[in-house]
Image 1 (cartoon, helix red, strand yellow):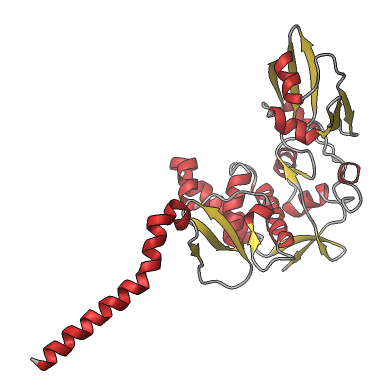
Image 2 (cartoon, rainbow, N blue to C red):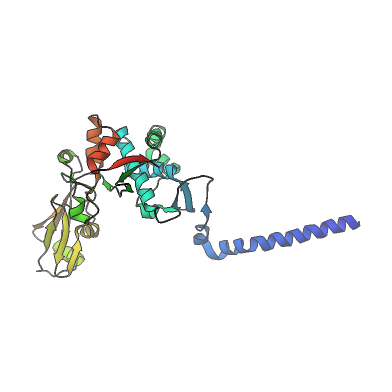
Length: 307
């Protein structure tokens, strides 16, 4: 009986300790709600660079190559030529390591490319999941550890979907240090189905959104690739990219046309127009260029090295 009493007392003591241990967690669930759950950090066992991605369940730390695979799936059509996919994988890996030069853990937000997890890819690709996933895996595997450098330093290799006819000059748009973003002929991009897109607004709404009066002049300053660098109104100056975001345009290569009491905004191309043009690269890949040649086309003086 004495032994039984001691055992019961021990069980009671363990129950008290367990309650005290779980109390903070229980309180966080009760009072913190969904936000408290999002603070969970999942850390897989891995060596090498890690990328932090924010998701529904919280912040997930992913090995670099795993992140590149999911970012690749989110950033380029899986039907593109394998050499185009491989070039894009090298670009994404380079951006990751560039973003992580001053941080112990790389932030996906600083890379600027969202990540699609396996479940999202399955939903997106449906019955074609296995085939398209295999292509993503192959592109990442065949370029594992490869990055773009110039003068021994990692590049910031910009990319976009479709040009307005040629890529933009990096120095002209961004200034010193971006000379490797050269203007490349992409005249075949005009053949793309979604090359030109239009938005029509009432003039009153257009000017109200822009913050200028009904009679105020609107001046557009363009670069050598015909993209709008600046938009000047009586309200001040904004960049062409800010104007593009304000009106939901596909690119900052646009024209304004008066149509009665309306304004038509017509844009050409898709994306900011700097660096690697995926559509033109895929055309060149179909003609036989490999991923190293593609990267050399769009990034002047770039070298590919293994990390």
